[in-house]
Structure formats: structure tokens, C-alpha cells
Image (cartoon, rainbow, N blue to C red):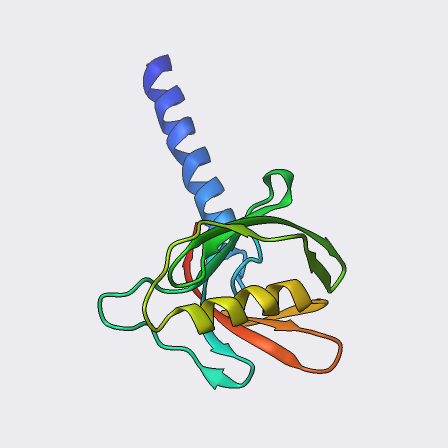
Length: 146
């Protein structure tokens, strides 16, 4: 009898906890998180960026561990560190592999330059905007949130 009452009490408590947690309203579109999100490059210096068929997409991932960042410029893999203070964001010197990819090197170089010139960021929905002192220089879309 005691085991049945304990089981029933445990079940009721579980239901209450689940109902309490599910009654909390989540924001309808909280947007993506700056860190641990794969940010895919969609626009660079006002120009759309498309991944060529069979090519690698240009992307950026910012981690919380030691403020490391890594990704792909569309050809080469890269890594760097970054710092954030409020809406200010600074990328340190970027290191990358050194392969050559036909028709991707200009975009990659411009992406690395944009990261180096980034001074501020903002996230609206699932889009990350990186800006220099004057304007938005890169737009990236969240591809996956971990």
C-alpha cells in the first residue's frame, strides 16, 4: 500500500512539475544564440553570397570556450579568437589553411577582411549582422542551433 501511495504521489508531483514548466511562455521568436550556432554567410558588403554547386559554404561558429571562433571561408577552414563587450565585437588575427579554390578566393578574402573589420554585431531573429564603423558588412543566417 505504501509503495502504491509513493508511486501515485510521485506521478502527481511529476505532472505538476511538467505543467508548471510548460505554462511558462517561451518567446515566439527568441532568435538564435550568438554562440554555438553555425552562422552561414548570406551577404557580404551588400552583395548576396551563394554557395556554388559542389562547393563549401562560408560560415562562422563562435564558441564560449576561450572565445574561439572557427569556420570556412568557402574554401579554407579558419580559426581565430574574438571578444564581445555589449554589442561590440572584435576578431583577432585570422589563421586559415592555404588551399586554392577556383572562383572562391575573392569571396573568402572579403569574408576574412569583413571579420577583421567587425566592430559591432546585432542579432535579429535568425540573422547575425556584423558592422564596421559605418555600415553592415556581413549578414549571416543561423543554420543550426545547438
